[in-house]
Length: 138
Image (cartoon, rainbow, N blue to C red; front, top):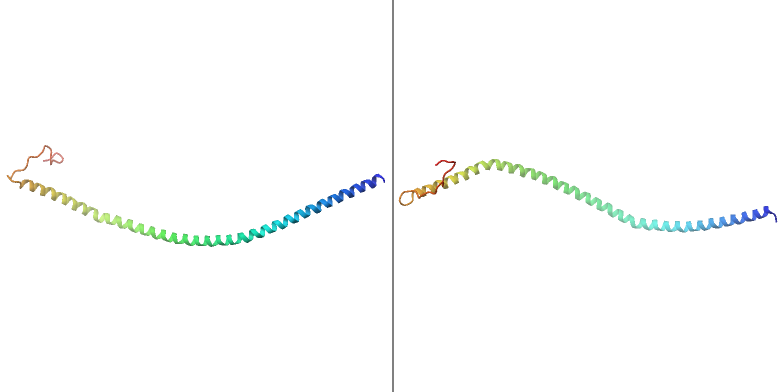
């Protein structure tokens, strides 16, 4: 046998080895492809109900957000109304209330002085130094 036949025989052996390796790799890839397909099917069967549930939850949350927004708008309107009413009440009652309180304080002071003057003996009780003076006037 000459060297061309040896080369052909070695080439045939290498080709057979390459073909065997290719078949082994193809078999491993086929097994892995089946496993991946099975996992994808399992994932789909578990994920679809979760996605559906999530969509329902998002729909409910959206409805609740709309209701909360409506409540907040109503609350803002009520707050504005109460604020306006409060300012109006303050303007309407502040001055008369202050006047009534001042009148009451003045009446109480006048009544106290009248009682002091009407004490037995007709004289005023002795005053303490500086008592009853306001702004330096007597």
